Image (cartoon, rainbow, N blue to C red; front, top):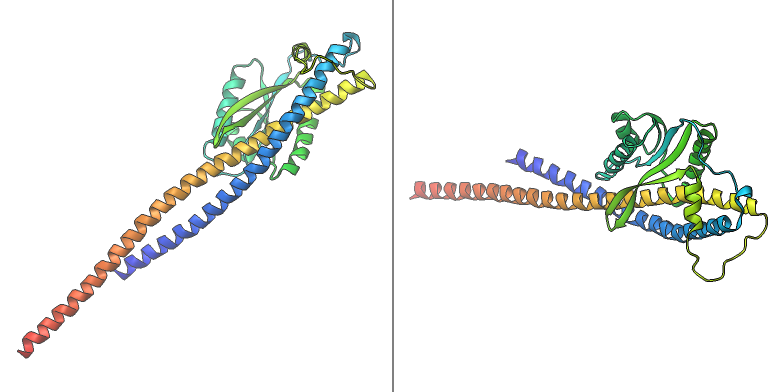
Length: 296
């Protein structure tokens, strides 16, 4: 009996320690969600401003002086950046974006070249046989997103300018509501005529159109750089918000399961302990009755 109760004590202690870890990770995930969601909201307004600036540029600048943004000719591969996680305990977060990427790339012509952001999604894409060019480390804070975006832009623009890739797509999970997210894809390059025309046709919120100040070509180039940067930044921020939402949901499920396990273990421990006490009482009573019988 003592060995069994000792074993239950150890299990209860281990479950309690695990519950403390889960609660800590739950609080950390909840805290992280806030900073990434705030970044996504701020980026939404800035992204809209950049798009409207590009819209005005494309309306006013003559086609002859526009920046060369057409698709590269040739048979370049399709470049893809897949955002995942470096850490686990995120449910199906990496599986969802990996499966979506594989399905989307399989339907496109050409051989893909893929960069993974996160070791976990990198492993899943490698297991699926997708050709990987390398992987980047997932940022651990909002301020760490900008350096990652710079690395991705340098790598992808170098490949694009050399003709190694003719298209660049982003794959990531976008938060929808609560702990729910969905995989999405965005074509970042090429900045072709279709992209230019769609921006030029965006409705302006007022009747008076603004003027492009300074050099028109320089302004357009600056806006294009901001468009590429903010598109990657937003994709990364939305992926991080989804990752932490998924981790929070996973920790909530784990906390519930551990609570139920502790309840069962404590119940078993108390029943076993009461059974031992009852046996000892029966032994005392039996001994007392036996002594009483001998004296009589």
